[in-house]
Image 1 (cartoon, one colour):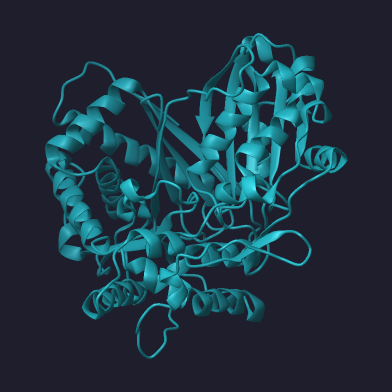
Image 2 (image 1 turned 90 degrees about the vertical axis):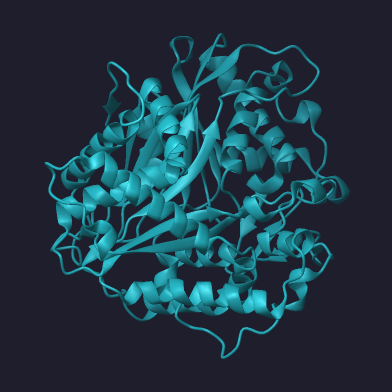
Length: 510
């Protein structure tokens, strides 16, 4: 994780850089006619990790669809639909350099055709899942959309979006939803040239994503010196946790020499269990992520605990949307990357839960409460955004140096990461005034590359069905071992969910 490379720090925090609170738009014209802005905060850290750690954090999102359209119709429409998706969400056309993002407006139809041909491809006779996994196993060269055609009339078709995480988190779902909605748009069958309009700077600029640091400066009241000191103390405390022995998932003994092979293993919980879990977490007074983290922690402590650990270091990604005042966002550019790294600590006393034969429901409730409280403490101040904005350049250089000079020293265990990726309803937006053909999203999956020595548990829901995608690298962890851990976690999740509610039969599929 990024935190392990963030030991560099200026001698004093001081005031965040003045541009943090500047109302000036970040995107500025260049001499070549493009627009550019620098990367800041978590954007910069994620970018360096992607570049120097073999595509770490890159996203592979996929959706399955059912439609009355033929494969030929979908094939004829896909590139025009992808171009119109770019017009609606120009983030898909941004090129990310080492320290800045660049958007080059397309003003000629032939250039739009070339861009769409290069970045939108068609895969036939393959499943959506197979294409998505293939994309996740290869480091990204450029943002791409792949239309998957097998048998659209029977629901065996879909699309795969492969792109950098630098400027995107939850926005990836909206990109896919727009693309599918535009596939249903009959005018797209006439191609790009038939309705081409140049990307005008004035129309595009309001849609380009601003940084979280910029939004923080616009939407969060200026911090006092004391608030900044508190935010820095939270940051420093998070860094110190990396030096403490933690319970975790042991790395494969040959991890230093094994080949890299990324896995995305999906666990799907039935709707009855999903509802029971939400009800149980409410009754415990904790978030569903804290409840699931408790199941991960207890499963690890039972399976791998040696008694010599000082506690558990649990990594998570915080969504900074919680701090941005929605009432003041009208007219501002979108913020599409709102992630801030986080990592809580549980002392060893919290992990003393007894043997497997003991009643685990009470232990899970106590763990969930402790995790929820620890997360709230780490996320008490929005000014952690200012800390990352100021320290990100030095932290990014540390990431680069660790891979330029030599491969980082591997830890004995992987510290688990849990990301809460949101709720997705599968509804498609209305686009254009023309009549729509039938295109329906039947499934949505998150995924991507995790080349860090940890297992990332990515929790999300689609149409109220809870899922968890386990992202890991076979270089560090044996897939069978991860599957057994996932089974232990889901067993505990079932126990926790049914401790407050009674259902007849619930199940989870790995």
